[in-house]
Image (cartoon, helix red, strand yellow):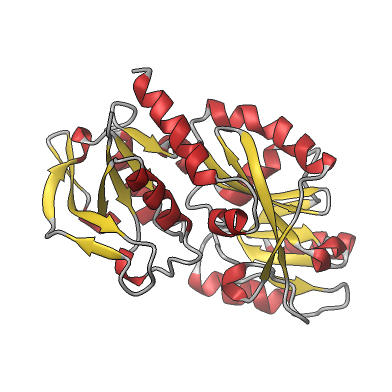
Length: 315
């Protein structure tokens, strides 16, 4: 049966479709004859227990520059949708968190992917620390003394905002770097959130692997290699994507975390692995599915819609 699917996302007219995972998920839904609607998170409205949004019905084409035809917006009850994909990009701030509370009012009657309550309770850098057997030495704190002590003990470290995304604000501090105090002060001027300090993993020069899991099962991986002279491998800041196979270590990580992801309703997840270390579990708006398929890997979009359709059919 065709499903009514609403996608909570950033403006669809402005996305780069050649690399956009949300667009790939939407194309697959359309190919399966599901009705597609898009809306922006700012249009959500909860009144007397009814959650509505200003949605536009869309038809998509995999053609840059003419990839979407949209009908005029109209306000609808999101509880009347079969599926909502929560796919707006971070920052993971109070606006993002509030959106999870709002979507929680319709889930699971309307299947929200990923489960909004567990998106909220699984911040990506914090969530990874639950699996300490795979996680590098890490400190999460806003305390300058604690951060300075970790730096002294571990020497070469990475410093990054707790709720940052796409490589934003990631800095490498070597053992003799005297800038930590100033960086903490600069961060404190714009945010009250803690920082993450992590022991530097030399294997990052060979790449930061993005592994996509659907309902806890790995679909495949891409490797993201930093540009020359850079420490950040994220594609949005100049990293280069390349094909890569899953290793025995990767599969061990997936086997350990997969059942928990499935239990929490985190159906579409991207984890970051450097060497044998799990560094992040991305549950908000994971990317990499387009590149994975282009390299001849698994089709994460098809796998996800198989899972969604099965869950809706089982109701």
